[in-house]
Length: 331
Ligand code: AQP
Image (tube, rainbow, N blue to C red):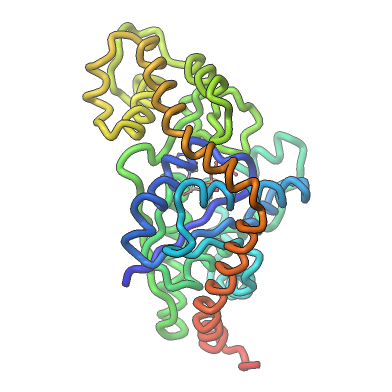
């Protein structure tokens, strides 16, 4: 049976980008068609400046949102990365397979290290080595598929390279995984800066729709979305990125094609009103379920405990095999 692994980083409140690019597909499709593991990758949240209490809070909130989005612990495995030691164990071995040049080529490293420098912060070594840990997350489970938004494709490509290289040098140990992307909304853009992706850790929040935003806040952010001075509505990502982003969000909410939707609106005001309504309705059940689950933290903790136990059982033999293959004496 196909195995799927994917994760979400508790570096901020989850956004509409995270939902349309990842969570929704995990819940509606992936968990039903494959043996799936979904993880709150909290170790990755330590690669940038962070407040420990906030990371703890956001980790629980992310896990609760995964369940609110429809992940069913009876159907898939939901857990927290730091609860399963195999991720960190394998990460070191993969750092011994990866090269410095490969890590420095990663776009996220370039963007986030530049942002840290502008903010006068030092760049953590773990920001550079983060893709090795991400590769370990995936390879430990023998995942065939990794459903991700567009921004994570490069990291999955690197994971493939590391798996192939390890297998060639030390004997076949890892499944070589592939990234799968959603048909639309693989890259939801910031409503205030449609050339930049909607990212949960960005400081300017005016163009970011958070999953737990009040409906009024969602509508306000959409109404204030930056578009352009062209009359009418047309779908052209390069020439009209703001309008295209709104059309793609609406397409993801309604299941229609962005090109077709463009014909249905004669101005950006009407388009924004439709997007605001569609997003508010999309998020309504998610918010309601999140409120119910938040009132029962013991249930969420129990799901995470059971999930980690199952994940450990799946990961340990493969990580032990990698240790043996690379030349480490069995304990
Ligand atoms: N804007 C986006 N559009 C579509 N998909 C997106 N994803 C993230 N942003 C968008 C997808 O969500 C999943 C989880 O992402 P992550 O937690 O691993 O972090 P990220 O990819 O680095 O995204 P963020 O939200 O922007 O976090 P920060 O600001 O901390 O870097 C992934 O499948 C991702 O592709």
